[in-house]
Image (cartoon, helix red, strand yellow):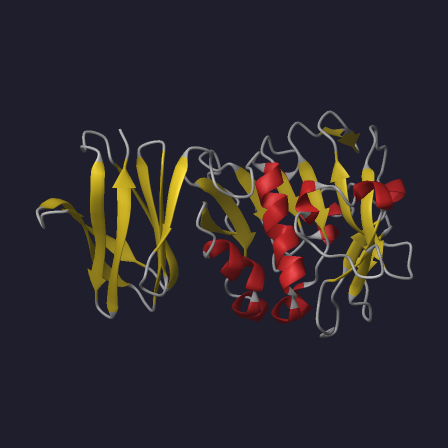
Length: 313
């Protein structure tokens, strides 16, 4: 089944509209990404495989305090959540901030084999351009030595070029910061949302790879899966562990009819779902279906997708 990401953000913030990270993850076949309102302190995150804290989120938004030490893998992009303040984590008095000019990171030699850098080509041996240009701010940082009462080997992975400003770090399971125990994988990638529209493909790949790593995935696709790209633009499907996973684009709030059709044209199943603007995700069990080739049809107002998939029982 799809791995589920709780994407903590504030959709009322103008910078959410240019968030290429959310757009990219939402179009990744093997991921189900659900927006979680940062202003909802009571959001239930039990069903998710990891939490991504977008930089769009305010550092003291109502949900932030509840994310401190959460028993989920975390990708934190909001370095200001570490600050000492009511509603934040109080992990640091200083050592965090925003860089207003740099576009490139320098990756530590020992960290270049980290799974998050899979298929990334380093320039000059150790550099990665994260944004094409800076719009006010771009790279953010938190220096590990500035964490309050940190215990454990917090790894500096990549720093702002020309500065001692750690943009990417990893806090290992079992470490603690300011008395908070880290029970699941924790990665920081510091990117300021004012430049989200300018993120490079390498930056997006690093974020996606980090999510794969945090959730224990191998290059994104679960094992024993058969993947087919739809011939229709805007839909992707794959079968994994007896579940058909579908994701497709839609322009607005509406309904769509999803049909599974046998090779002879017989309709095996049909369901109507509510759709939302942007990426929509759907899952259905293939239990009881005979091995063979089937078609999936998604029909709605302005939606027409058809794709083939194979059931192997």
